[in-house]
Structure formats: C-alpha cells, structure tokens
Image 1 (cartoon, each protein chain N blue to C red):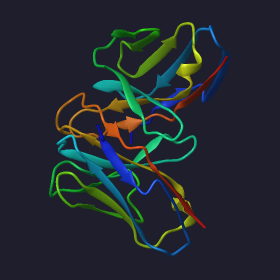
Image 2 (tube, rainbow over the protein chains, first blue to last red):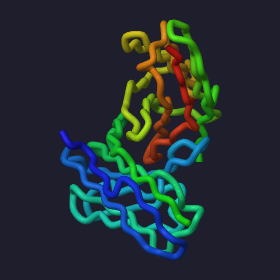
Image 3 (cartoon, one colour):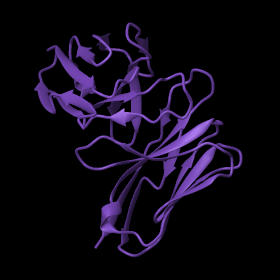
Image 4 (cartoon, rainbow over the protein chains, first blue to last red):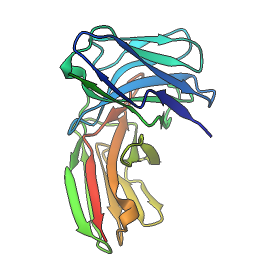
Amino acid sequence: NAGVTQTPKFQVLKTGQSMTLQCAQDMNHNSMYWYRQDPGMGLRLIYYSASEGTTDKGEVPNGYNVSRLNKREFSLRLESAAPSQTSVYFCASSVDEATAYQPQHFGDGTRLSIL
Amino acid sequence: TQLLEQSPQFLSIQEGENLTVYCNSSSVFSSLQWYRQEPGEGPVLLVTVVTGGEVKKLKRLTFQFGDARKDSSLHITAAQPGDTGLYLCAGEGFGNEKLTFGTGTRLTIIP
C-alpha cells in the first residue's frame, strides 16, 4: 500500500543550485499535482497534470518546471533555487481531475531548505 | 483565485472538551472537502460534502456545508489526543477550477 511516494524526504540546497523532486503513485490515477505548503498559507498549487502527456500551471508556477514522465511519475524541478522556495512540497494524485468530488491522495512531503 | 479562510488558526483545548472550527469564503463551491494532516505526513481526506446544508458525521466529528455553499464547519465532540493535527478545508469550484485549500487550523488536544 505505497500510494504516493516522494523522494527525497529532506534536502538542503544553496541558492542557485538545481534539484528535481520525484513523485510516483501506484494507484493508476490519471491526475497528479504538486503543492507547496508554507505556514499560515495552506497548500498552494504549483503545477498539475490532468493526464499523461499534459501539464498546466497552477497558482504559483514561477521558478519551477515539471515533467510527467509516464502515468506513474510526476517530477518537479527547481532550476536555480532561491530562499523563497524554502517550503514543504507535496505531491498528490487523483483518479481523474475532470470528475467531480475527487479526493486527492498525498505523499508525505519533501522538506526543502534553501540557504 | 478563490480564498478559503479558516478560523481559528490555532486551538489548544483539554481532552474531553468540544470544539468547532470554521472554513469561510465569499465564493460558492460545488463541493468541499476536509483533510487532517499529522506532523511529517501529507493530508488525509476525512469527508466530502456536496449539498448545501448537508451534515455528515464521522464518529465524533460532525461536518456541515453551509446552505449557500460558501462555508463549512467541523465540530468535534469529546476531543481526544488522537484528534491533534492540522485540519484543512478545500473547496472545489465549478467547471475546470482546481481545488483551493484553506489556511488551516492547527488543533492540539491536551491529555
């Protein structure tokens, strides 16, 4: 019962370094999402992928890129990390974003600090 | 962007007490979800409410969706330490709008 798996769980970067956060789900879900969680701000959507082969910007996409590698995997890349990107990053998946009332299943997060 | 404000932001009460947390917006939602998040983990869905005025019960937790579908509340009866966590509401808009998460209520139940 892995569900949504994120790697790594923790990472410290220096300003300007690049990094890719990995996410994989084993529930055969069509839709996947990347969020960031900051104190007092809830979860904010960075990018999402409604289905394999498609990606779209969310509320806060600047400074990030994504790749939907296949149906299972959705990665988030920081090309040149900035201190403002210090956050906890969550990957989520759902059966189908076009279907109403879809619950999202979350990974346990990647805690990222940019020095 | 639709905004969801949750109150209170923090709540600390003794075991056995009752509490209510709120999720409010000026926007109308087609449905609203409640999640609980424990430290070091991702949010886990508790319930989805879809009809204005709907009330759903999950053991000691009672969820209500406002008649106008702009707000929701979560009432916990006889709180237990296991209820400790961050409670997040999330509203689903109409059409192709993505899920909007609230700011969260961090609940601590003191044994």
